[in-house]
Length: 106
Image (cartoon, rainbow, N blue to C red; front, side, top):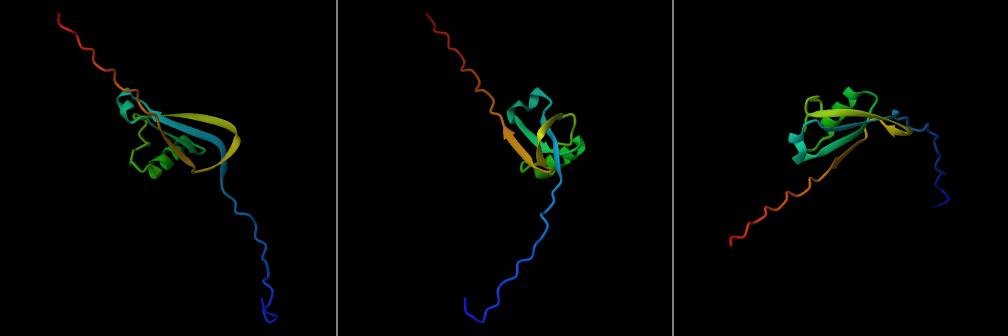
């Protein structure tokens, strides 16, 4: 820095405020027909409707999480704070189908 440069003045700014909640919603397939795509969503939101809307918007596979007939919602109240709008998609693999047994002919 040369002698001619003026010092840089720091400007204090308030911290950014983001909405937070203690409530998370777990959306899971309602029917056994959906076992092949055992995708669940965990969303930080205050209401079930908000959680379903956030999951539908964020899902890269384009699932309609708003459909109450396809996905059930369970509310989880925690002591931790979460940013509203956080979404976690998790896949649960289905167990492999059993191999057919062959009967030996005598």
